[in-house]
Amino acid sequence: MKIQLFLLAAFVAAIPYATADEPLRIAVASNFASQLKIAVSAYRIQDSDSGEISISVGSTGKLFAQIKQGAPFDLFFAADQPRPAQLYDEGFTAGPSQTYTVGRLVLWHPKQAASTVLTKQLDETERLAMANPALAPYGLAAQQTLMYLNWKPESKTVIATAENVGQTYAMIVTGNADAGFVALSQVLEQQVPEGTFTTIPADAHDPIKQDVVLLNTGSQAARAADFLNFFMSHHAQRQKPVLGPGATDR
Image 1: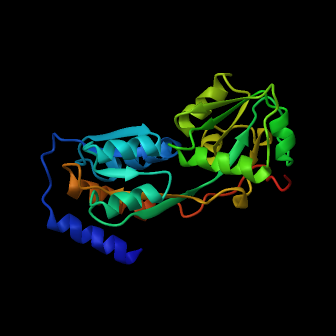
Image 2: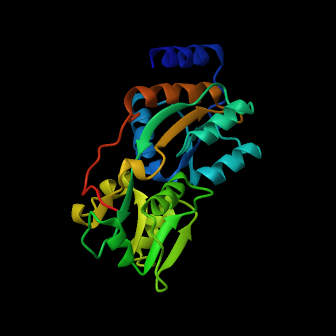
């Protein structure tokens, strides 16, 4: 970590700041948007001259595609590791990525008590929401969980696919889905009653390690490096707490 922070500091010193009227553009996966906004607010407090900061929220896959197509983002907070690593390999970044948090998947069923027997919970769900596995790491984790459980939906069950985990959460809140796979950070942030969600076992899916990378597609390289240095020093979360009922049985 000290080496990474030193490199960032050196990068800041080597590049002059761009004009203040150009915003620092940050792309962030939907599951981490709220936490990032908190970090941005803290950064503005400690640096009143930080200038405008623009945050674009979306699925990791969609943001990744936009970056490859030339979107002028300065930082990319993804919900996985492979896409930031690929951007580094293909020359879109100013350096390798860093893990800033490890996500946890939960099954949230707001109108029904959580159960440690996940298959029972799923069997009692008529409309199940999950993010698109091709676009969103949380959707991929949900898909892997269903395969791990060897669960097959009944004829009455509808699986509704959203673009990202933020839209998945919204589908459940609005009643367009009875239950769904969302991020632990979302239910904790919204203070969802603990008895209505089940934390998915870590071995049910690949680890959701989320990486951030400094891009070279934007115009605010020095500001981006400075913010990333601040973020990794004060807001990076190496491991999410495992709260809520734990699922221990298939």
